[in-house]
Image 1: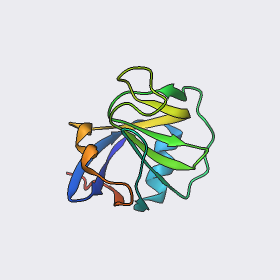
Image 2: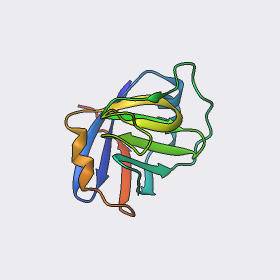
Image 3: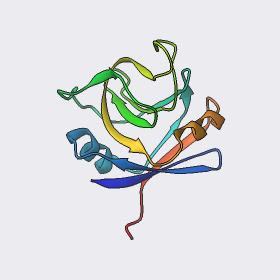
Image 4: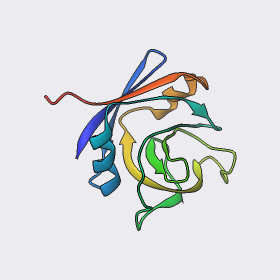
Length: 126
């Protein structure tokens, strides 16, 4: 569907968006800026979006997945286990809409502290 850029603490990471209703809604409200909340190996921040859970929403996610958490409402970046994980896989607190995936090594987000400013923008075409 498209690519976004995630910037925080000198880190710039690209992510590929899936062709989902949530991804389309995220594109429509870009650019976004928020304050990082770190929960285990997940970063999330509040966004001004109201969307329903999609039929494939889930708690078990993969490293690098981007999720929308309706309860927040929040933009989530998963890069390792969270406090509710069972093993090494990331797990959301409750179901999320997985709408994208980090391109490359999502573990880079370990360097982003709680409270850091996160900026999300649409990647330049080309």
